[in-house]
Length: 79
Image 1 (cartoon, rainbow, N blue to C red):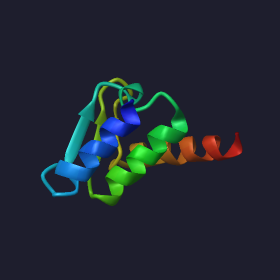
Image 2 (image 1 turned 90 degrees about the vertical axis):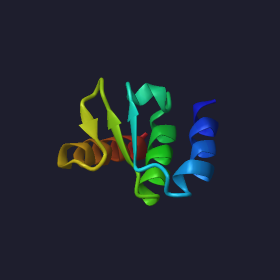
Image 3 (image 1 turned 45 degrees about the horizontal axis):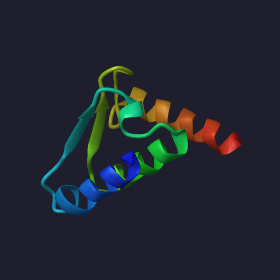
Image 4 (image 1 turned 45 degrees about the vertical axis):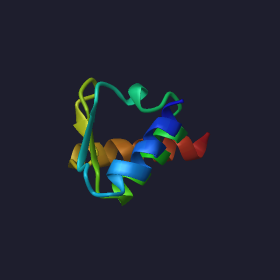
């Protein structure tokens, strides 16, 4: 599903350096599960790609976005 889609993008355009930002309407458009979302975002960040989420109004490279991701990681780890 969605994880495979993003991984496919990562193997092609993202890894070739042709993408520097992905804009998604919502976090759920990348993944339904928090663990999957964090995995996808970690892979994209490792490639230097920022992800912006319109509905949630944050970017993975902003201070607010980083705090949101840290909170999601902590919540995911405690489950």
